[in-house]
Length: 339
Image 1 (cartoon, rainbow, N blue to C red):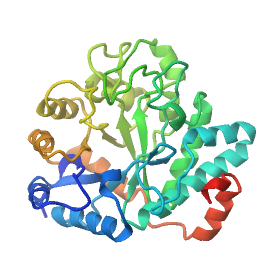
Image 2: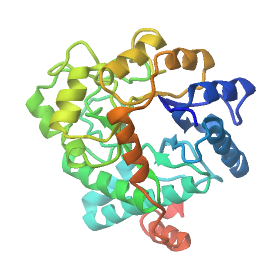
Image 3: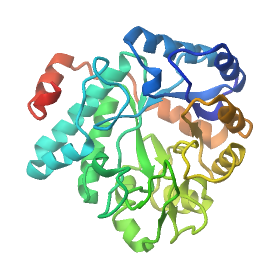
Image 4: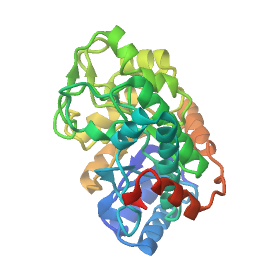
């Protein structure tokens, strides 16, 4: 078995090309990620996932997806129902806390059912960002609310729902994306808020849920910590804030390196991410030239990073055996349009 490298990679289409298979066999990424372009029908998804795992000779190689609900949902009908965004759960919680928490757990538990049937093992959820007025809509309704305590409560319920269904949660975007006034898909935002305010507002949900197995970084500059580098490539943010103040000792994954927020060529991006102390470099768009460049700066997954990766994989074991029909019926009491 080839030693895993510090990579999570996407692919271009609905099946692997000969070039992709050869590349994955040679580079041995630790995991893979799927997007809407990669999914069409059930057997095709299962076959693609199996192809990916076969390339790295690891039946348990993790396969990630962004399945939040709302506008960030890669599996759509008939592969999975259209679900509400996090903001809808937050609205329900503000009216009825118990109902909001139950709905959040149920939604995540249903995500786990949807993903597991295709062999997908990790969901980039919960979104623990706490937006402020005027911030970029890149988070927007994806957030559970603008109150850190609400985000924490619903984020916890969502993570527990995923894990009850045997799917690994990935909290994002640590240490917080809610104050970004620019869309990181296109440009790099700078947050100038004092550290004392960040601690009470932005960092709080991540600190409360620092026991979760995986976190994804924010492509955001926090000038109070490091005025020159975004969290994803900042050793100070990673060590002093994420590992230190927030106390997260789980597997740390970069946000997508193909986003425009990060500067430099792809070799530079990958090298900077790993040098900052991030465990894994994520590349999503499946462009071979970019993946080759990213992989040229990868290294074997070993030491503490390997320990964290193994802990993440061991954090879920099977599911709770709940009946899907009953779960969908109960969730339909809160959001009838989804049933």
